[in-house]
Length: 198
Image 1 (cartoon, helix red, strand yellow):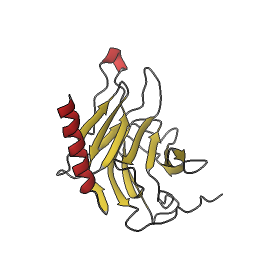
Image 2: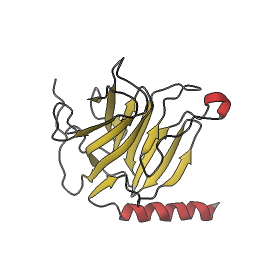
Image 3: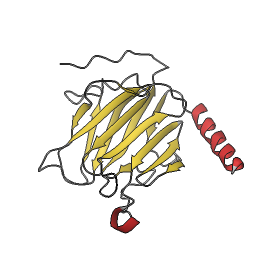
Image 4: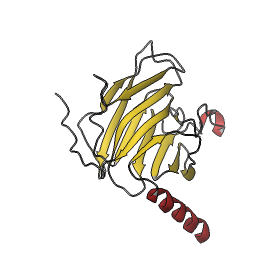
């Protein structure tokens, strides 16, 4: 058991060393290591970043639901329908705990949100505390399998508020997948997060 833990630690520390500057996820050459698995979530590590995502594993008597977007095509979050019911959520942090920015990201809707409307909510955190009173909202109304992208220069869907934090929680009320994201080491070019507009 200690050998497995040591091997995992060495693997994670190696990937931290490889994590400098800007990382563009998801490429077929990027590998991911399963770090933790719970009743309603999994956590993987790649290039010094941790991705924790919800899984509806207790659905249908513990059989769980099929994963439609698997690594390295992206990371799929499922709304949890049994047990501690909740929204689909992906949490991103760095293994070393340092701050980073989300320059842009693309989600793939895995259920239709066009009728009721949908918004991706991103709550940045620093040292375990929410970065803002309210999450940053990104309009995500559309049909299943539709991809929607958000970037710093895009208004009003700008990612400008997603700078200088150590954790980002991305949620939607239905299943979705993160299929592209650019993460920037904020230590390379430190910036102060802008204040949210009122």
